[in-house]
Length: 160
Image (cartoon, rainbow, N blue to C red; front, side, top):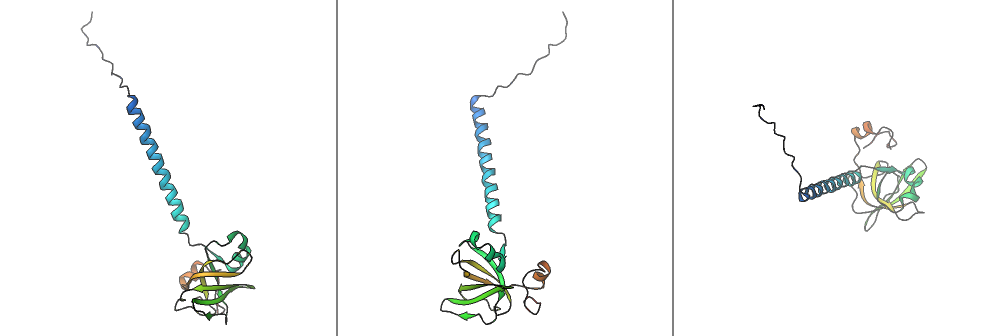
């Protein structure tokens, strides 16, 4: 016979049932963690979007908006600002559409008539144009105009 060395076959490693269960558990845990991470990202990013409706959009979608909180953009109607014990009442408009706003808290220092504002709150009910607000934002600059040229502007064409 020959003097050549015998070729050894590599031995197959058989996985034990315990090792297979451990691998499955790890895959399951990884899938759950990835799912949770995706859920948190979607929820976090979705709630942080800077979304708002103009007055005419909000009135048109009043039925679907219901009493959910959103941001409303409009021009403060001249002569509509009245201080109350809880805050300020005023009206915002866009074209012929107008919404009455009851704001709780102090308005910002730059708040005045005839300027664009964004108010945070909700409609008082499905059939009303009364908007209950807890925040007034008056932060419009030249950067805002450049980024949103078709949004609400003051009658003189500027955004303060």
